[in-house]
Amino acid sequence: MDFNKMNGLVPAIIQDNCTSKVLMLGYMNEEAYQKTLDSGKVTFFSRTKNRLWTKGEESGNFLQVVSIQTDCDDDTLLIKVNPVGPVCHTGTDTCWGEKNQEDILFLKELQNFINTRHAEMPEGSYTTSLFESGINKMAQKVGEEAVEMIIEATNGTNERMVYEGSDMLYHLIVMLTSKGLGIEDLVRELKVRHSATWKKH
Image (cartoon, rainbow, N blue to C red; front, side, top):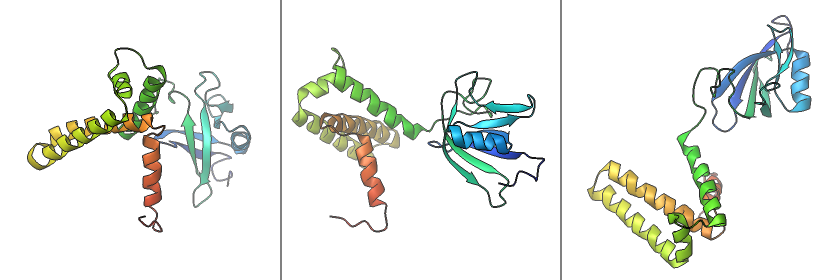
């Protein structure tokens, strides 16, 4: 890194490793950069406090480092992180007031919820009743929901197709969970298939 271009400081762009949202911008001197490398937590040089400042040292909302890249001129850092809590001092997810989430990530939250249902099996839960019904009933339910989605796709509306597709996906995740699997297993399979060297078997 070239720390001499801007009087010993370089800008550090902080990006969420999962969502790719830009969370904040800070500045590092060489000492802050080295401390970030050593600790695995993002540390800036605070121009207002005139000292090193580890993000989260007071709030506990640390930025756990995943990777650090330099730009083509070696004078700007891109740091990908896993944030612990909101990033901005105002309490928002980013310093631009944006929500740091992507709707697709709700599938992981849903999988975690269904895992909990499977482990605890609370009475009165629809998900519990599906697990108790057995694999044949669960498979039948997935098939029924798939057929309903197809009907909406060919003779219905997009709104109803999304509704029925959501039913199908939910029941599919329940069935996967009952077999000790999860939506992540399908994602891993799709990633393998995305490779140029993948061949159908």
